[in-house]
Amino acid sequence: MVFRDMFLSRDEQMIARNAADSVHNRYGNNISKFMHRNQDGVYPIQGGLSGDLLEDLFDFTRALLREKRRLADELSSRDRTIKEAKQKIDQLNTDIRNADAIQKKHDSETRKAKKDHDKQVSDMSQEHSAIVSSMKSNHESTRMKMDANHKSTIVTKDRDHKNEVDNLISQLLVNQKDNDYWPDDKLKLQFRELQRQVEELTAAQHSELLIRHGQRLGNELDPTGFLGRVEGGRSRFFLRGRIWSILVEHFFSAPFGFGAFGTGEAKRQVFTIHETFQNLLDGNNTPTANGSATDLSAYSRETTANTWRAALFQRINSRISNKNSSGYFGIRRLSEKNRSDASEKIMRFLSGVVQLSGGNLRETLREEVDHITALAFQIALQFGIHPARLQLIIPQPDQSVQIGDEYQDCEDGNTNKGSIVTVDLVVLPGLEKVGDGRLDLNSKRAIVPCEVYPVL
Image (cartoon, rainbow, N blue to C red; front, side, top):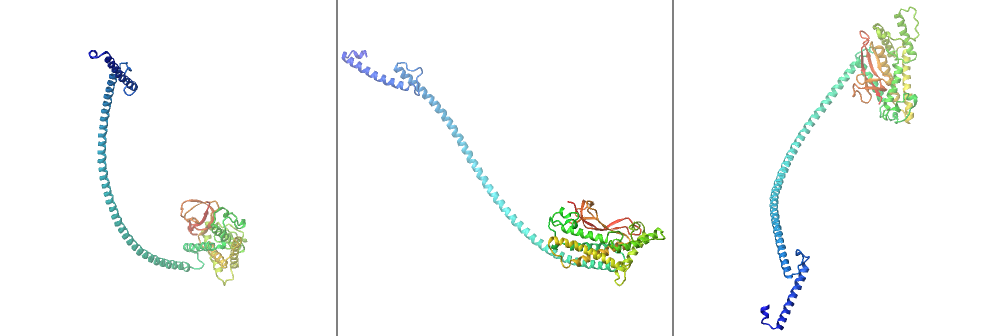
């Protein structure tokens, strides 16, 4: 500047100096504004502005370079991170493509396996259906043939069995004298027939004898209140039990056949004969017989007494069976009266039941009842004719009995054989034989089981 001033005049020097100052001031102001504007910006100058604008500009430039290097390093680090991420992404994409290929292969294999399996199942199903259809056809054909053969066999066996039974029954009923005692088979057959007739009389199809559930009959018709204790639909058991109680009263009230004539004059006459015989056995030379004796124990312990008793009742049966006979002490007429009284009592009972139900007695009822009392009398006579002791099986109410040969449930039979039940009602008495009246006076055997309605 001094060298230049040596060639300039004072005025020129002044102008040049002013121009230089002006430029210096203008650049200084611009630099100052720039520095102040960026002092708190992105690239601050450590320690602030020094006042030397050129130095401050250099410091700013150096700070800018440092920041540039830092950003370059940071960008380089980020580039490396991005590159590594891209590599991982590329690896993952490769893995995904490999997995997709494996999945596609697996799907293809699965579809093929499923197709093969479906085809195999279809083939097996068709084969199985064909086999089953063939087996069904063969089985049905065989079954129909066997069924036809079985039916033919059953028909033949039923026919042969019926013929055999009819022949046996005919022999059983015919091949003996009218006054002889019945063998066990005939006793069983006739007693079963008596049970059947009572069952038929009170069968459910006879609607006039149906008793509505909850209907009370009173103490005279239902003295034990049975109908009030049981469920509906059990009235037929009550009717059978009540009819049998009347039969027992008129035909079986005394052992060894002495109850066959009821409780009136006929019974007294038979007991008079028994008293006479008993007095002879006891050695009473001045016997007085009036029919009041009731001790029949001799027939339980003495074979001679049993033989005499059987002969007596055979004679009585002979006179009663002979309609041309004038009667044996008039006993035939008295026995007929006892049967008639029994029938009347059963009819009065059934009439009372029908009146409560609002129905009418069927026309054939009296004839059915007369058949029952006639058969009951014939069986009762066998209690006297038979050398063994015949007796009814009649347990007491609330007595415990075992289901089996001697007792059966009136609904379930002997299904629960061996079980112990408590008797609520005797529906059908059973028939039992004690000894043979000759050598054996003690062994017991049930010929027909007793049917009871148990306490539930």
